[in-house]
Length: 114
Image 1 (cartoon, rainbow, N blue to C red):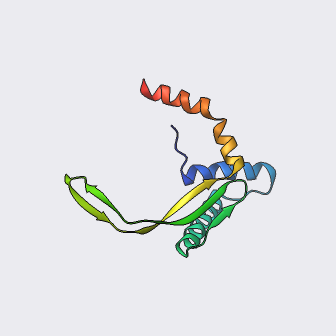
Image 2: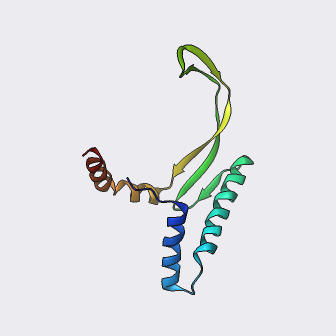
Image 3: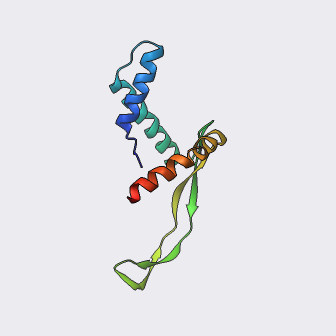
């Protein structure tokens, strides 16, 4: 499967914006992307939920304390403390778009097995 990095995302956005409006540099787009990510992370760190219509929502949830196994010594039980975690819930439009890509996902998985 392909991985899209922040740099590749900035390139794609720069190309799309350059087609329709005044040219904005790739560096500025990369800074905007990083600022959006930083603001989402800061909001979540403050316990706020982040909702992006047509994309999805990020929600801070409590992960309860539990007992786990030590990977180096599977017979040993280890306490895992409670912590805050982030849950992402995709929006309807994102779900629909991703659901329609099943054929592509299967094709990539088949190629990867070869």
